[in-house]
Image (cartoon, rainbow, N blue to C red; front, side, top):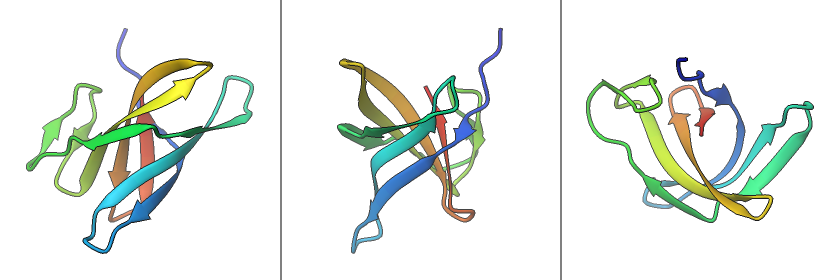
Length: 95
């Protein structure tokens, strides 16, 4: 079975004076179509130069920032990856 394509999500982020982007909260829809919001506890920018395919099977280039983030879901830590296409202003999620 192949990996699912990442879905578009709502993200609240901070843009620093140095031009960095910091993801702070993510909002996704659950299986019932209800929005669930999660605070990002930790993150790290795992973007790198060049065009390549990520472990999620997503082809990215220099115009995509990738963040590995830790959120808490029902009392359990979960790692997600957020993809930010900064030219389009679109966030996507992969778990």
